[in-house]
Length: 83
Image (cartoon, rainbow, N blue to C red; front, side, top):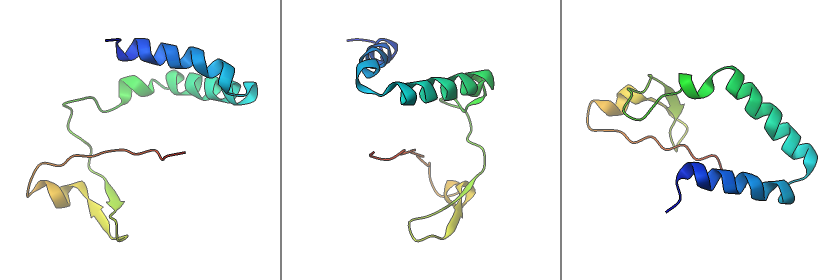
């Protein structure tokens, strides 16, 4: 089985022929900007305690992480969309 790093490298090679150059240039510029601010090093890692946050629930009511932690463990999933 290929490692995630190997799979990402393959996808990066494939996208060069599938994505228009101007979009690839934008992606590279944004990626460089994120690397410049050390996004990866400053991100929450597996096993880290999540910072407190408040987001709207499915009905639009603001809910904080603390609202749920007192009862049971919480799983947070980030879905960036299906586009």
